[in-house]
Amino acid sequence: MFENEDALFSLDAPAQVLEEKKIDHEQIRQLKAAFEEAGITDVAAQREVVSTCVFRPYESLEDLLSKDVRPILKRIQSSASHKVTPVSGSAWDNREGDTWIDKM
Image 1 (cartoon, rainbow, N blue to C red):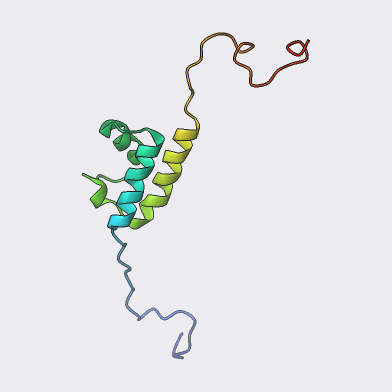
Image 2: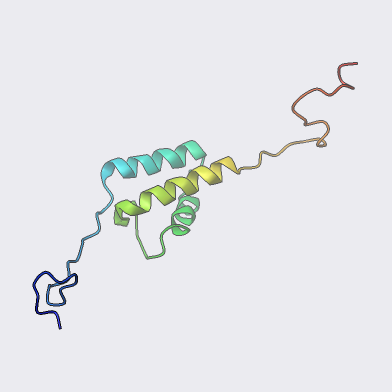
């Protein structure tokens, strides 16, 4: 059927397997800095964040792949931005700006 060498798909060609790049030291430093900045210093909490992004077993950050870093950083940033700071008082007492009543 495909006797022509210029065929679109060559079924005889060996499949090319790409090796996935391991995480490098700079990316590990970025992850550690992001955890520190987000206030996630507990190892168990860090492992929980990484586990939500990486769906394979790993022992340490060195076992991760380069492609894992971006989703982990995004998860760290989103968890840091969604932290609820405990407040005392009511929502009225904790409002940001003055209302017309306050200005009277």
